[in-house]
Image (cartoon, rainbow, N blue to C red; front, side):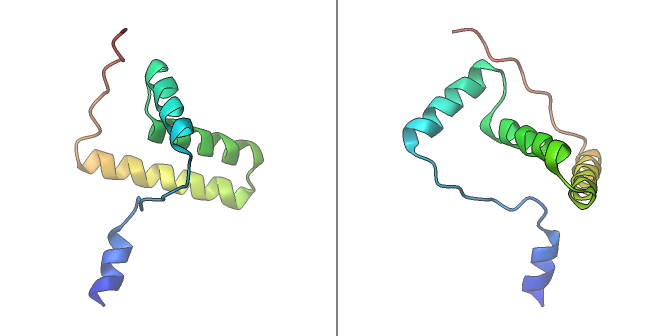
Length: 88
């Protein structure tokens, strides 16, 4: 029972993916130059794909997920703004 309630509390489950190290490193550098990070970039890509190719159900799930994140951040005071990447 405790295991089930713990599962219900988890909203952003880590999702491991298999990626060759050189690709992951290059992607990290590109994201840094773009002033973002891999997580934000992948999430933006996923949302764009759902908006472009998703069904009504997919878009409804996306909307529900975005509301959930907004509500969680509002309770926690929001996510701090990231500073732009410094030019090297």
